[in-house]
Structures are given as C-alpha cells and as structure tokens.
Amino acid sequence: MQVFYNDRQAAHHGKHEMFRGELVPCFEVPARVEHVLAELKSRKLGEFAPVPEIGDALLQRVHAPRYLRFLEGAWDEWVALDPKNAQRDALPSYWPIRTFRHDVLPESFPARMGLFSYDAGSPLTSGTWTAARQGAACAWGTAQRLLAGDRAAFALTRPPGHHAGHDFFGGYCFLNNAAIAAQALRDGGLQKVAVMDVDYHHGNGTQAIFYERGDVFFASVHGDPRTEYPYYLGYADERGACAGEGANLNLPLPRGTDFVTWRGALAKALEAIRAWGAQAMVVSLGVDTFEDDPISGFRLRSGDYLRVGEDLAATGLPCAFVFEGGYAVAAAGVNAVNVLDGFRQ
Ligand code: Q9C
Ligand code: ZN
Image (cartoon, rainbow, N blue to C red; front, top):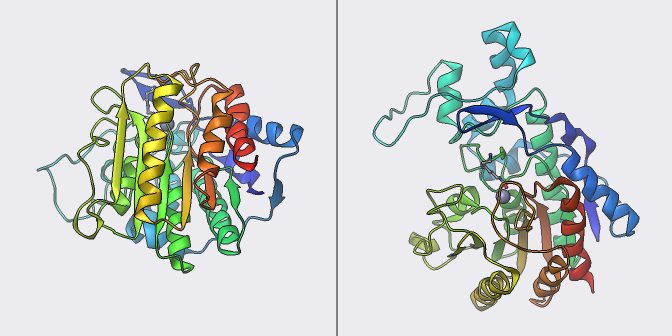
C-alpha cells in the first residue's frame, strides 16, 4: 500500500491549548506521526510515495475561499498585532453565536479568528498553513491511488482534519483531509463515496460538509455528544437533509464502551455503507478509541485494531485511510499500523 507523508507537517507544532481555564501542553504533537512512521518501517508495511502538489481548486471544492485566504495569512496577521505574538500560539477569544451574526467579514483579526473557529483548543502556529496543506495533499494522493486502481492507500496526515468544516477550524483540525479525499474521488469519476469515521470524536466537520449531499455517505462511531467533544453534533437522529437525506449515520456510544460493543456498531455502519452502494471508502482513521488515550473514553486494545482492519477489508471496498486523532503518542503508531496490517491480510 502506498503511504503519503511529508515531514513539513511537523511545521505545525502548537505549544498550548486552552483547557478548563488553563493553557495546557498540546496533545496533538509532531511525535504522533513519528511513531506511526517508525512502526511502518519496522514492520515493512507500505511504500512511501511522492506527495502531489495540491492546488487551490481542490481545496476550494471543500472549503470557502475566504476561509482559505484567512488561514494562509493568519500567522502574519497574528504577529502584526504584536511582535511578541511570534513567541505564542494564536488562539481565538471571541465567537459569533447564533443570533449575533452579520454578513460583514470583520477587519479585526481576533474577530475573524472567532468567525472561522469553534473552540480555543486548536492553536494556530507559524507552520499551520504549510502543514495543513501538506496533509491535504497527502489525502489527495490517496484518492489518486484509488482512482488508479489500488485497493488501499494511507495518508499520514497531521494536523488532523475531521473537525474542520467548510469555513471553520477546531478540534486540532484546519483542512478536512478526509473530505478532500472523498471529493477528489467524486471528481475523479466515482459516483458514490463513503466516509467511515472511526475516531473517538464525532467528525462534525465532515458531516457538515456532506450533510445535504446524496453522493457522499458519512458514517461515524463515536463518543456520545451528550458528554463527549465536539458536543453539539453527532446524535443518532442526524440522518442527512435534502439530497443527503438518509446518507448520514451516527452511532454514538457511551464513555467506557469496550471493543465488542464498538465492533458491533462498526459492523452496522459498514453494512449501511454497503447497502447504500458505495464504490470506495475514505476511512477517518483516529486511534483515540484506545484504552489509554489521555483525552478519550473507549476501551479498545492494541490487538483490536487488527480486527478493525479486517472488518474494513471485508467490505471489499477500496479504502483511502486518512490519519486523524490518537494521543497515547507511542501506542498511536502500533494501533494505526495494526489497522493497515489487518486490512491487508
Ligand atoms: N483537553 C481529534 O481527535 N479537546 N480531535 C478535548 C482535551 C478537543 C480531538 C479536551 C479534542 C479534539 C482529531
Ligand atoms: Zn479524536
């Protein structure tokens, strides 16, 4: 299986995220992918492929042009506010909620930070735009491989993507890599594409991007939004709208769920994807479902990820794997590569 990875992704290196009124060290760190890389190499799994150049056209198929322009210039604007800002991450402090809205794009940088985000846990740094773009390019590479006839490909992306929406960042995500892969598969000629999101957190960004579309099915198994991040989306009654009616499936599970129950939900999601008639699947591969994940609550063990890969392979669908969360840093390597290993058996 071809693996897409670019070390410029390490340019995104946040110092702190806001958590319970305090700035705490980031959970989403460059070392996460280094463990995946080391595991791929020691198990001789995957061949590294050159990362394609991604143009604005594909990014704009998923994200709003004004959001992309904002991301591209955000770091320079942040530093222009105060030269001392070069030493600290950019975090939003203001948000337009529900009725506090106007179409005008504010001139104020902090105001635009809030307009284009939904939490204070996703620091924007000097390298964020470069890294996010490289991640998106890796995701695009996997779509190209599937379109060329490969059974599977893996985008080792960071920052992750599934919380990023059409025009917002959050949950450590800036560009929605999985959505970009799915859109590229559509643009490359496939009529029906599914996104299977197995990250612990609901893929609110991906769901929102495709919610009213009938050509991309979104399925997710995740922590119940009543208690788990990202809270405001991911309920079982969200089934899609307009042309997308019936093309969205959320399977929320309580904190503490073990692999047997989790696997049952995965089976349900995969059966729905099969019945819908998907021709290919993008897998939002978060491994924060792991029992020792520091910010999540499921109880999967390392060996379980081999079974996850087998279950995905049993669908018979070509799979573009896109890396998402997983914060038990050292174990993230074994766990993610176990999925790929299980898939190829
Ligand atoms: N201090 C992904 O897994 N913060 N994003 C939770 C922890 C948000 C996770 C609180 C977690 C976002 C891609
Ligand atoms: Zn997650």
